Image 1 (cartoon, rainbow, N blue to C red):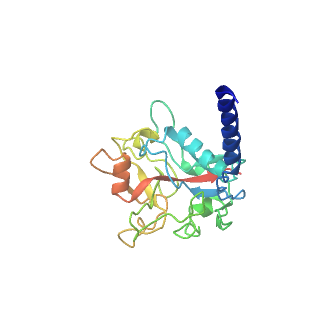
Image 2: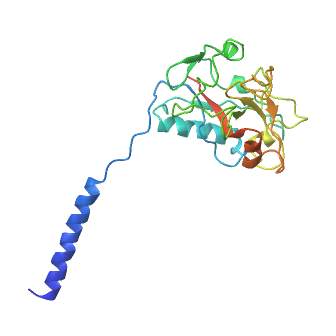
Image 3: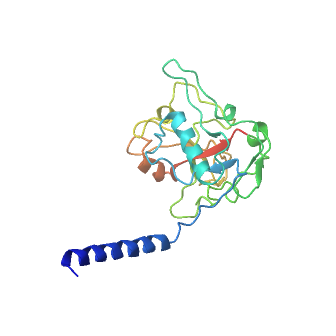
Length: 231
């Protein structure tokens, strides 16, 4: 056999072996699916602090995460308010999430309507405000504590007046500004109304200006936010 023929046969054999090995590679594990889910907390934000790419970017993030877990057939909206700026009117978080009811990854109903959601009757909390993967968000007593959810909202789910930033420049700043956050686990340093609020506990702050990923982590957050399906 000539040397060239031997090389060709060896190359073909190697190709067949490689093909067999490729076919034998295990398929990646399927992500947990929850097609009936209509509420979740983002397990991770976009990674740029409170700069979410505006409210539209936040909506897209919700939609992407829902799609991964079998709930992408619904229209998803981030629970975020924006403040009046640059000739654009304010947007209330409560007005953009549909009418309810909403249920988490496990099928637990957390609120039956917008009014129920913004009442003491809602069922949001440490054990129920789950991520898109059905996981609990670490809160008070955990290291790190990630219980701050960006909302930019009053306790009633409405926007703040335009004079004082509470939305990190309408979710476009990762430096200067402040964002109102709620406590996903409904717990804080004190046992008071603000600490127990899921949507309006305290503004962000920090050495970078209040809106960076580092600043959000410094006060017990990680750039997470709530997502609701509008049904």
